[in-house]
Structures are given as C-alpha cells and as structure tokens.
Length: 234
Ligand SMILES: [Ca+2]
Ligand SMILES: [Ca+2]
Image (cartoon, rainbow, N blue to C red; front, side, top):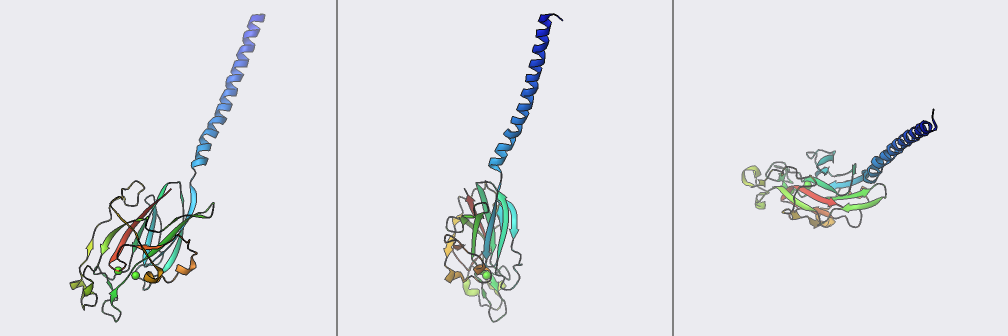
C-alpha cells in the first residue's frame, strides 16, 4: 500500500466512524427531541369534585369522564362525586346537570301530598393533582344553556293532572356542545345561588369547597330543569 492509499484508507475509516458517530448521536438527539416536547406537553392529572341537585355528567374536551352514580330517579338523590382525568391546558369542562322532574311537566311527587316544582343547584371545583391547587371553580364565569324548562306556568304546580296543564319547552343539546372548540358565545352566564336558596344536602358537606366555588344554575332555580354548563380552563 502506498502512503497515499494508506492516507485515503485512514480517511475513509475516520469519515465512516464520524458518520456512524453522527448517526448515533443524531439518534440520541432524535430520541430526546421526541421525548422532550412530550414531557413538556404531557397531560397533567386533575380531580373534579361536584355536587348536584339532582344529577350530573361531566365532560372534558367533549369526552365523558364520569357521571353521577346515583340515578336521578332515586328519591332525594343528593351526593357528591369526585372524578379524575388527564388533560393539557387549556381544556374545557362541560357539565350536563338535571333537576329531577317526574314528567316533562317539571313536577315531582305527582299525586302525593308534597307534589311540587323541584329545584336544582350545582357546585364544582377542579384541582390540579400535582400542585394540589384548585384551578377552576363554578361561578358566573361559566356559560349555561337551559335545554328543558317546565313548568312555564308555575301556577299549575298543584293541579291534579299537571301533565295536562303544565307547559314545558325543550331543545336538543347542540351537537358537540362539550367540545373545546364549541362556540358558546350566545349562551347565558351562570347564575350564582346562595346555600340558603339551594340548601345543599347529602354529600355537599363532605367536600372542602374552595372559597371561590359558588352554587350555580340557570336564572330560575325551579323552572330550569336540564342545563348544559361550560368553562374553558387556561
Ligand atoms: Ca331537585
Ligand atoms: Ca325543577
């Protein structure tokens, strides 16, 4: 081998070693490039605590993450629930809340001594589990859409056949209402209600509510029966 071809061979070996080295290090860099952003945007774990009179289902970015374990048909179904979910900021909480009504008349205990319009109410708070910090609470910054109202003529509440005399109105939930990108700009602001007005029962006292968490509902605690609620958490 001539000195020149020896130099050429050394160069080839050196360059191929360099290329191999580059390949290895670029693979390593590739790994860290893919893992770093994943680490940065990895979903955090949250808990949502919620109490409703009488029933609720909770969605995050359109996905159902939990619903009231006590059927709405259970008499005096008052209970709190805690659901855990993973999300990345910003995320949208959607809650479907229902006050119990025996029929679309909006009346409960029909034919019994205590036949009446029932009333609703809901409170919730979201905690970031990694920091223990409450990051969202129910209040007037939530948007609401009432999808079932009854009775529209509350004087029917004591009638012997409320199904015949009570008027109601309902609309279908808009498709995708719980999705992050849903436009709720024409929804109403939630109405905040006092504990005196709602008199929250079973389960409410088991949760340590953040000072910011308010009982919310539509503008009518009795007539508004099924309500969709939304908040974007940033
Ligand atoms: Ca109720
Ligand atoms: Ca009602």
